[in-house]
Image 1 (spheres, rainbow, N blue to C red):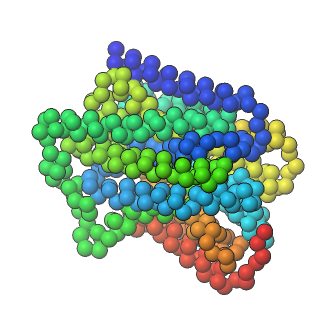
Image 2 (cartoon, rainbow, N blue to C red; image 1 turned 180 degrees about the vertical axis):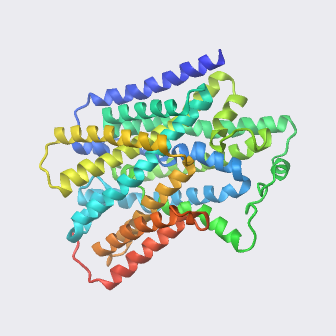
Length: 478
């Protein structure tokens, strides 16, 4: 009976999501509408969409699992992410909105290419390659998260769960473009925050009723779970804090799927309204995610699940009545979908808008461009699906790889383009190329286990961008 209730609720949720996509599929759209909403979406909706997109299965499954596996030291990731989100909304969001209007562009590569025209073609091509490469991994991580959630909830084979998740996301992203993505994100952001707030509150009540102590439980579990620095000592303490906090750098304007929400804002008033919504949502979400991991350790011990990233679905099924568990489990799947759809759209815009339309200079009308975009979503989604099948990495690892490669390659270029008048096209290229290469060199041999790739990539990229700009003559900007 309980499984039937959860199944019905989940099917209803999927029907609503698909319904939104089909509704917007009927709307007549231009290329600008399909990829950026044509400034027709209110700021509060874009803010919720940005948060749902930014946090993904990484927050509900990855971070809760990381907190469950490592204990109190996971707080540094939460502090880094929350700080990055606050800084980006308060100091960068308005810049993106204004620059989008000034240069009349739909994408982050398009903005950099339009501003630094002397190297515009190379910037478009290379920036698009970075996005396509890393976002394929990112989308694959979201499909994997959906598969894990469906597996522990319904006993569905993980691979079948991945297929189901991918089909739903691909269908509604193809149907309505940016409109359907944003409005489904709004529903998903609400589901996600309810899951991340309600679950730890219920868990804390159960802990109190059973006279359990989180502190004592963390000490009993061992492995440094009761310490903010884990098992690290001496210099290793600094490395632990730096590595976990360094997620901060990936939020500083370098995530195209987040930048798109700021670029879609109608005016600065909408940005201000969105900032308050996004910041409050974020503080609640990250506090909840860490608490879920700590409460799960207290209630069930470290061997509760074979895979730490399944702890949230496991906990919901244990703590909640079936009808509530069904709603909150939909929030876990919503986290995956809200990011996968946005990233599919970003990859698509890089291919159809930046490469086909602009870099190859193809004169194509909006109707054909939208058709190309829809075909691209399908192809990219299928490639990500194959990667999700073949990858054995945890969601946390895949997202960390993509976060460093995209966020920390683009962030220095964005920050310098906003605030340094001398910054030039060669500096942009230096930022992107050095960031891309550094991430690959650092992640694949496993150097990331010593010093995090997000930290190293950001500072290498920033250093190359500044040095190359200083060594080259200033070029006139558009």
